[in-house]
Length: 142
Image (cartoon, rainbow, N blue to C red; front, top):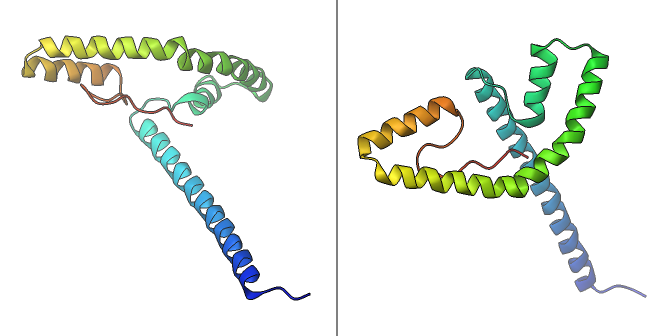
């Protein structure tokens, strides 16, 4: 029982699609790793801790000088709480962010262009890494 050339062409096409999906996944992973490294480099250059677990590692590992056992205990506490914190920011915390953003926009709408510029400058100084004025808030790192 011989197979027709059309069957082999179909198998080749499926294999090629799988290979392309695999390559796209590798490229995407490399791209996100590069973005994450750029974010960390920027945070270090601006003397502020990186975001999330990386920030926790920097703060508790380097700043406080914990030994490995203390570090293990702190890591388990943070891992347990991270789920609660993430659920807050995805639930009621998201609503809070919407309220804060709309409040800021209402305040900015009352200000003159000069006042708006000062308002945005003060906010940028207090909250580095957050967008100025009416820009969209940044997406949190994965």
